[in-house]
Length: 132
Ligand code: MN
Image (cartoon, rainbow, N blue to C red):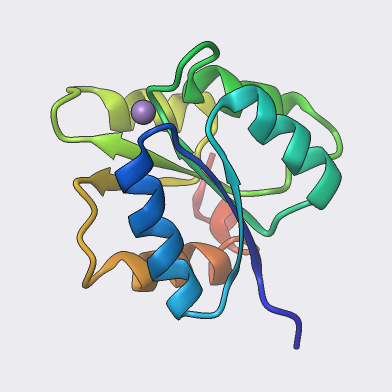
């Protein structure tokens, strides 16, 4: 079975390293982008199974990037999981309103991170059955 492909859009170098390390240990194929513009290009080219999206990015932020993904016929089925910050109140609500399927808070809990990613990857087909 091919490994699931995950696109990480994150401008913080340390967070990126941590996320890539955790995903690589679990044998996911990882694509990296340091800003939303590059991330959108990669998403169109590589069609990842999941996108992990930082909210605060230089230039276009993660919320706007998520809105664009959800408006794009070719990309809208890809679940976007926001990487939200404890320090930014309301990030979770804004992320969900922009079209994210869920969120993972930062600082990242290394013990639970992989389980969260697996849950979002496996739950993507039934997520809409819950309502709205
Ligand atoms: Mn950031």
